Image (cartoon, rainbow, N blue to C red):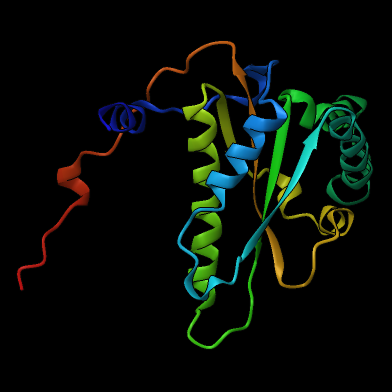
Length: 190
């Protein structure tokens, strides 16, 4: 267990541009997604699902992003911007969209379901990190785009919780400053 706590105390997100092949194998991705689904889930509602982008699907979805960008983001996006959108998901070998889906259920508040989807995202990152891969959990503009929502086939009760980029990190990210516990921890006096 000391290796687990060491990983938790030292893990760091990787920049998507620094993630390369190899990505997780099919068996490893199955393990990663299985671990991601092992999060608190009040009332067993499974308030999340996964959309996996790998291989050519990443570039095909990049075409969708470029089209939506041209329609929604900017009246006349530059060719550089459109190329950026086309290549966006090719920054890593595997990208997993975690979709949060809120289910109406007495006793299962919306907030808890959203938190469960967030836990799912982080478990996905931790599982990939434990297998030696770098990860980056990001949203960026396309997570909030109506056109992208439509392209992903999201229902009215669904939102993108994040896109998790997974691959082999080409360099280790330096640690960043973390909050001092004295500044964020209080004890209830009772």
